Image (cartoon, rainbow, N blue to C red; front, top):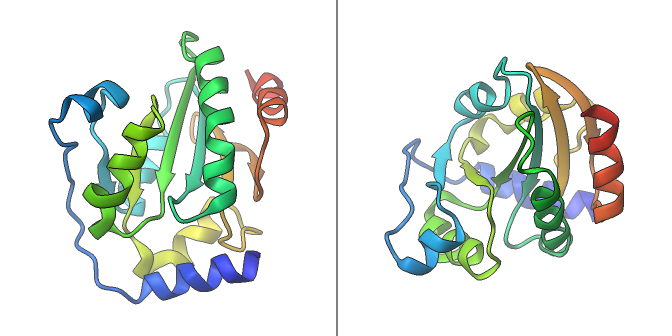
Length: 176
C-alpha cells in the first residue's frame, strides 16, 4: 500500500503546477463548512505556517481525497479537533496532496460535504517532494495518511499511518 501511494505521489510530481494561492469559493455551503480559505501553498509557505514560534501544538495531517485510509480517518480527526479547538495552545491543520487543478472540483466539495472545520492547505510542490518529504521526517516514505505534531518549530511526533480517534487523543495529550 505504501509503495502504491508513493508511486502515485511520484507520478503527480511530474505534472506541471502553478504556485498560486486560491481562495475558497463564496458558496454558502463552503463558507459554512470551512470559514477559512483553502489555500494552495508550496513547501516553503507550509513550513512557515507550521513552524510558528507561538507555543501552540500544531497537529498537521497529510491526506488526499483519493486516499481511502485518509478519508476514513478524517471524521475522527474532526471529533478530536472539536475536543481541543478551544485550547489556545492547540491547532489542527490538514494538508491535501491532491492536484492543484482539483482544488475547486474535488477538494473544496469534499471539505464542504464532510464539514471540515480546520484550516486546509493544498501542498502544490510535487517537483520538490524529494526535498520536503524527508524534511518532514527522515523516515517518511511519502505514504499517506501521515500526521506530524509540532510546537515552536520543533517536531514532537510523526505517524505514517491511519490513526483512530483514541490514538490521536493519546498522542495529543502527551504533548499538550
